[in-house]
Each structure stands twice: as structure tokens, then as C-alpha cells.
Amino acid sequence: MTFKLNSRVVLGLAALAAGVLISDWALAQAAAPAAAPAAPPAPTFNKGDNAWMLTSSVLVLLMTIPGLALFYGGMVRPKNMLSVLMHVFYTVCIVTVIWVIYGYSLAFTGGSPYVGGFSKAFLMGVTLDSQAATFSNGATIHEYIYICFQMTFAAITPALIVGAFAERMKFSAVVLFIPLWVTFVYFPIAHMVWYWAGPDAITDAAKAVAAAADGAAKTAAQAKLDEVMADAGQVFIWGAIDFAGGTVVHINSGIAGLVGALLIGKRLGYGKEVMAPHSLTLSMVGASLLWVGWFGFNAGSNLEANGGAALAMINSFVATAAAALAWMFAEWAVKGKPSLLGAISGCVAGLVAVTPASGYSGPMGALVLGLIVGPVCFFFVTTVKNAFRYDDALDVFGVHCIGGIVGAIGTGILVNPALGGAGIMDYTVGKIADYDMATQLIAQFKAVLTTLVWSGVGSAIIYKVVDVLVGLRVPAEAEREGLDITAHGERAYTM
Amino acid sequence: MKIVMAIIKPFKLDEVRDALTSIGVQGMTVTEVKGYGRQKGHTEIYRGAEYAVSFLPKIKIEVAVDTKQVDKVISAITNAAKTGQIGDGKIFVFNLDNAVRIRTGETDAAAL
Image 1 (tube, rainbow over the protein chains, first blue to last red):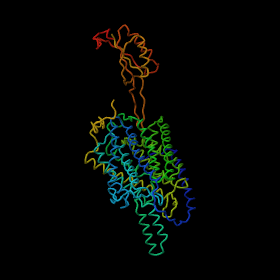
Image 2 (image 1 turned 30 degrees about the horizontal axis):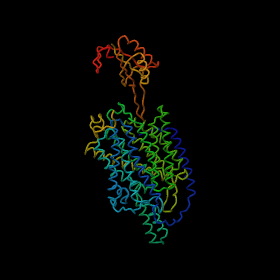
Image 3 (image 1 turned 180 degrees about the horizontal axis):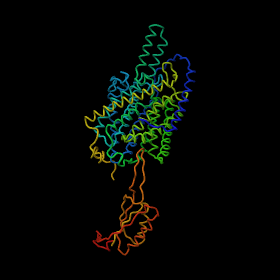
């Protein structure tokens, strides 16, 4: 796939890269020797943190229903409105049930670097007093809240995919596809990217190494530290950072959507008949609810109500607004008119791109990220999609996968403290680690490629299995008639 | 008796109705329709998809009148619906054989 970048984008990237190189050098000169970490305080529940995470969990649910459902629903034809709403609603419900049965356990318990185990299946062993680690030593939240919060992420990710095969997928195929996809694609990727032992385990082990006498004790303590550091997902071990789900949520769902659009094929009449959105009013309501809910998604991913959450919040404001404006002006320049659909698509693209960066980038970094991702996604959904003639009905690939890749790579650059980024905490020494752009970008690329391959291949296999079991696509007459009547026996509007 | 059928711009409906009422026309039937004539459609763009919309929304009016009144009705509609731009519409006149008022059974001119 080849494409031509907008010259302004190229210039901006070049300027950004030059700044990164200079500041990286300066930072390397200033690297201080590691200090021994202070003793971490005993874990305590902070009611403020817990309250914020309760709120965030509900905000992420709001993103999906009704936010995403309306955003997608408004873009299909009136005869398929309810089917799209139903796909999203079903996804939320089935993933919620699977999550407490085995999903949380597969994603967030130790096991292998690729997937967790069944030690917390049926939420075994989780009680009112169970703690989940945050990103600060000695600060935990109730595990039930962490389970709910992560549950909402597991629910929205497959719900994003349904936009790609909207208006033609059999409901029974959706019913089978979603549980299979979260089981074999989402839970492993979430585990690889996000599972780790937590700050206290690492700091305690590092303290033991520092305190150990030389010889056998030191070796044993170091072995213990290595073991704690290895108790994490593979992508996490590589050092890739993904604050709120650029890889796990957006690249993951985006590539699954593209594979689905290719395997299921185009809608009947695609490219010949008018398939205009039936209610951009509802799409605007949905996109706006997505933006509001996304504060739970991004600022909530900080797991504590502190400065990190505040940073994620301001970034989620700035990048989103910048991307909406950038898409709008790009469209105005190229297509002649600034459309509302363009502005809200840019809004979502900005939210996608800032997702992995929200807790790492500074606000000015987020501004740059938004300005870049708007035109890039605009180019993909208008030009690349038309050039390759695939029917990704609601642009899941062009917005979520491409926006997610821009965000994942951008995060590797913008995390640099010299660019106003927050840096990456090294819990073994209790301070921000030295930043090296090449190292970080290689880790980010590995994370992106791993997600693309795992989800691309995994999704293709799952679509094939579902096709053999129930068939992916509705009959042509049903597609003409509309899925609302033929699959669900009801209509969205009485006209 | 004649049927006068006029295709007009939607925003001209109220003016046409007032003009016809003022010359004594007692009723009309109005339908929302789509069509095209010399006026070209427009292009709608949704992300990458461009659609040429060639059928434009119009209003169709049907009025049944006495033959003596036809010229007055035509000029009333013409004056009220005219903007001078393409897309103002057209007027067609047909012969009307019979008319019946359902409530009373009156026929022809009495039924209009």
C-alpha cells in the first residue's frame, strides 16, 4: 500500500523528529546515577481514587451505549438502524458476562506472557477487600472496580468492529463472532500490553536487591526481581507503552474490521446506490457522547484521581478538538465543503490517537498529534478506501486502526520529557527512566505489528469458523429489505 | 371541468394557496414529490462517498376547476410560484369528465 502524505504533515513530522533528536541528546548528558528507592508505604484504599474509578467505569459504558451505537446507527440506512444498535447492545451484554466468567482472569492474571490463566475464573478469590494495583506505590483501588473498569474496555472494543460489516452481517454470526473474538484476540492482547505485577511488587523486589548482602543473597534477590519483572505481558516486557488502549482497543478492532469487510464482501449496490447516512443528527449526538465518555476511558486509565488523570483529561480535550478542526479544514480544502460528518469523524480520530498518549504526552504534544491524525484518517477514509474498493462500511479501519497506529507511534515520541511528555516511570529506582527515542519507537512498532498480526490472523480464522458454522452474510433479499425487519422483526421508524 | 396540476418549489406552497383562495378556488390536493427538469441536482459527500442527487424535492398541487376559471387559475399559480430561476416548475392541464362529492352525492360543477 503506498500513499502520499500531505506536505504540511511531512514538515510537521520532520520538525518534531528534529526536536526529539536534540532533546534526547541533552537528556542523555544529564542522566543522573540511580538513587536507592525509599520504602513504599503500606497499601491503602483512597476513597477519591475509588470514586473516580467508579465514575470512569460508567463513563466508558456511556461511550458504547448509547454513544458508539448512535454514532454508528446514524450512519447507516434507516432499514438497518436497529440492527446496528442491536449489534452494539448485544456486544456489551455478552462481553460483560464472559468477562466475569473467564475474561478478566485470562487478561489480568499471570500465566504466560501471551495470555493469563484461569486462577480468577468466576472471579474466584476476589472479595470486598481485594486490591488492584494502580501506578503509584502504596495506592490501590478495590479490585471489583478495576474488574468493572476493564470490563467496559473489553465491551467497547468488539463493539467498534461491527461498523465494518454493518448492513449485511447475519445476527447469528455476530452472536458467535463476538465471544470468540474477545476470547482469542482481545484477552490475549490486553494481557500482553497491560498485564504487569504492579508498582509495589517491583519496588519491594528492587529494595530487596539493594538491601541484600553480596553473594548468594544478592543473587537470590536479583532472581526474584527478574521474576517480578517477567510477570507481565510480552508487549509490556518489550517496553511498549499504551496508556488507554491504542493497540489493545483501536488497532485491534480496526484491523479485525478490515479483515471482516474483506471476507464478508461489499454491501449490495456498494458504489452504485446511494448509501448516505440516515441521521447525522444522531451521529453527532453519538460522537459527542463518545467524547464525554472518553474522559472515563483516558483519564480513568490513570487508575487514580491525581495529576496523571488531569494530564490525560486535558490531552483528551486538546487532541480531539485539534483533530476535528484538522479534518474539517482538510475536507474543506480538498472536497470543497466542511461537513459535520467530517468534523465528528475527526473528533473520533483525535480521541483514538490520543488514547495511547493521553497519560504520557504533554498538552502541546497532544495538540500536534490531533493536527496530524485528522488529515491522515481523512486521507484513508476518502482516498485509500476508494482506491482499494473495500467496503469498510463505517470506516472502522480508516479511523480506529490508522488513528491507533498514529497514536501508538506518536506516543513513543511524545512521551519524551524534553517534549513536555510525562516520561516513563522506572519503579525499580523510583524515578522517571531515561528516554531513548530509538528504543521506545522500536518497542512501539513491535506492539503495533504484534497487534496487527495477532488480530488480523486471529480474526480471519474466527470469521472463517463462523462462516462454516452459521454463514456470515444474510441472503440478498434480506439485505435489500433491511436487517431490522428481516433479522429483528421491527422497524426503527414508522413512516 | 379541468384538473390543473402544478409542480412548484416547496417554499412557494403557501403563496400559491393564498393566490388560489383569493380567486375563489375552494380546495386543492398537495403531494410531496421528487423529480427533475432543467434544474440540475446536487452532489452530497459523506466521507469518501460522493452521491449525485438528481431528484429534487418538489410540491405537486392538483386543483379541479370549472373550465371558465382555468386561465385565472393558471395565471394565479404562475404569478405566485415564479422566482425567475430554473426549477420554478410546470403546470399541466387535463380534461375532467366527472366529479362527485361523496358526502352529498352532488355531481360535476356542484361538487367542486
